Image (cartoon, rainbow, N blue to C red; front, side, top):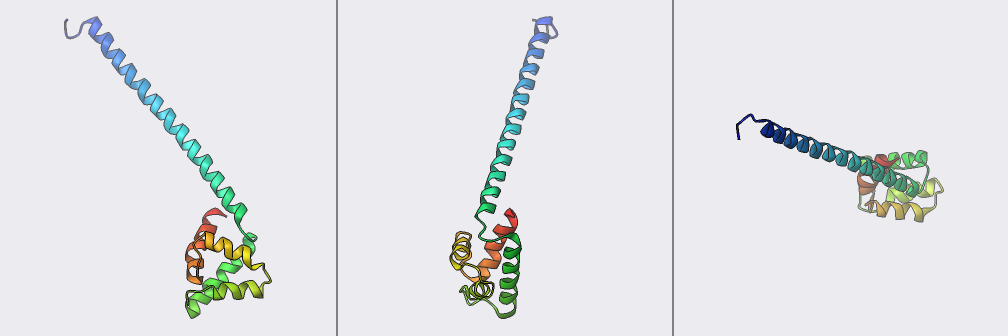
Length: 123
């Protein structure tokens, strides 16, 4: 067969078309995957927000207070400042403590570093 015969040109065009179809399918799959991932992230954020034990305003005041105390006095690896804030602000203790533990806030410095980060990413 001649190098530039009509049959060879047709085969080349067919191979090029097959490559284009494959790339197009891949692109559509990537778009679909990205959309599913975006929806999943939105659902996860909504579930995280629904689990917050207090309003955003109270959460912000709480984290600022605990962070200020940890910065000024230091962490003794207890929830001393957390419990002081709960008492001073007449908030129910167990829902907040449970939420903090679920979000790696086992002492005041972890409350500031871990639980606050989780709250800020999902509020």
